[in-house]
Image (cartoon, rainbow, N blue to C red; front, side):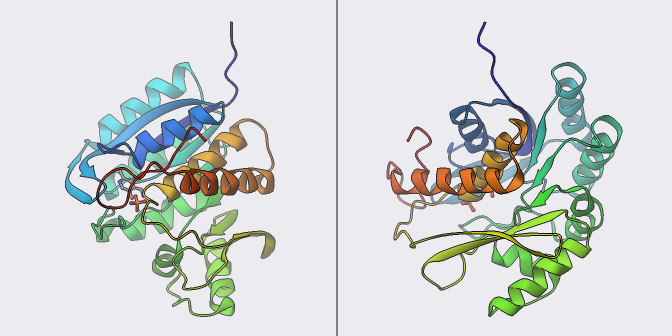
Length: 264
Ligand code: PLP
């Protein structure tokens, strides 16, 4: 019997194109040696050129998927991606509190797809802030998401620090702000914990359109690594290296923002 180490429950949306969302998450967790389970929050009809349509799974059924996994198989870490609706966030938070209040939780506060389509209802933002952030072991916003959650417009490094501190005050135990949206080279991701910078991860900007699903992959690589017992710093470092390698060797599929290479 082969033992797969690290059970990860992924609560996120489906990407029919296979690049981001639960498909990207399952590929990431599998490639890193973990065991992936899913509670799908919404189906998207999308490809490398964008999201064409979103079909929400009823919140109660998202909860059924979570319970089915947690009550039998169990989870060593939970990863949250696109939740889309306020009701879904409420159900997810209720079940996490009831069934696995201490399990490490990686929250990727997904808001807008690279193609510009909204993946979070505007009225769900307040619930994400008030209910999900305080439960996060680590929150992984990109710059626009950090701005939306903190209310700070991020220009320089001092703004970044101010935003990270606000997100920590809102209850996230640690915050990894991804620097890819800033117009700087090298790209720097900064991990904040306990009111200070715990680690930074940098690398030369890779000039490519094939970055679809990078945020999903980073968050699920962290979740998988936490599930396998790594420290947050080591998990973030491994996830950063994994995503860089996956961008560098991307297969170049589609005519838009193509997917990553998870087999590298
Ligand atoms: N579609 C789904 C279902 C997602 O969960 C995400 C995650 O952020 C995206 C699309 C966006 O992917 P990207 O912004 O990398 O194109």
